[in-house]
Length: 334
Ligand code: PMP
Image (cartoon, rainbow, N blue to C red; front, side):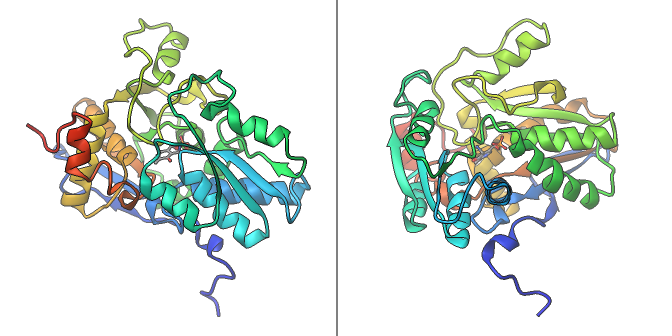
């Protein structure tokens, strides 16, 4: 039975690369390709990281069967960890912001995750905040394993070893620009590092969200004027952070762009309608980033981006006109 997997986690990775046909008006022979990470078993790119970190911890003895995996997650990593917990005889406890989409919370409950809901408006230094709570739960639980996806660079290494070689192979090594969203920074750092090692001319563009602190930090590091928007609230799930974390390898990024909530959401809705790719808001952010840089590219350039998760987990939010109106956001381009 050559094509039969022993458990669903073996189906992670090997996701398709698809040319964008109708959402980018390129001309000049420019081509844009998207790696569809929402086609992983739990519907996101984070399945890769969940498998990598859990299996590594089991192999090293940091985690033993019967143990509990505890992590802070915007939802997707927790779904991947739930898959790994079920298949490896573990328990999974996830710190999730109360503001997370209803679909994601429902999925996590359906998968048997023990949810610890926190108020996403608390400042990062608050002990009950998203950024601190997982750490204190871990300290109180001797059999806990904390993947620490925000600060553990094995997260980046997972993308360096799996996502990036797939991209390189799928593109026959002909890539000019990689555009990726930055949440923990694992994807864009791991993929970016691999691609630049193969071809230093490849440009790496990280897409952050307005209100996140990453762009300000990047501007300060590169010594340029800090013209990024001040820290603040945003609705886009999966990208940005309220504080600087260890995973982003800022030195790998050639550029950082900041998307607004409405630009990301409208672009995601276009992907659903015009490419039949039902994706989340961070995929819309990636498409927005691609469009931002298109006018500057050389004729014949090949651009690769990555769509992290499925739009089915945002039907009550970014695909719901009433919700958009309640947030004071547009439902279509005016
Ligand atoms: N998009 C979504 C929907 C996510 O959940 C995440 C992970 N937080 C990302 C993008 C960003 O990926 P990374 O953590 O690798 O930067």
